Image (cartoon, rainbow, N blue to C red):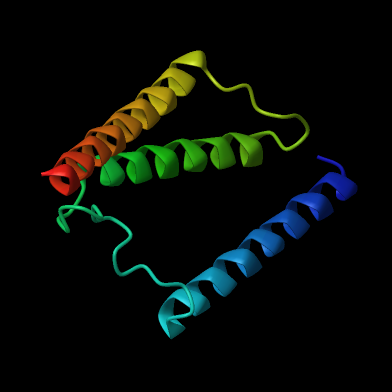
Length: 110
């Protein structure tokens, strides 16, 4: 690997580390509110759809970053199966939101 490629890789790692540090600092100081991030607005309970959406997104994003650092000279090719998984995860989340919205509208009308 050339010196320029190594420098760019190091610079990207430092930038990512800085982003992570800022987000963690803001999380711990309370500037980013995560209190009801994983709960439904209507039922006030923990939402399994939100949890699976978060887990799938984080796993696929981590895999993409791994592929990027493995070969920094080109954009990684993402397998279509992963895209199907991510879209399926989003579809489950959105169907849960639609079902909840329908439940709230029925509750308001009654």
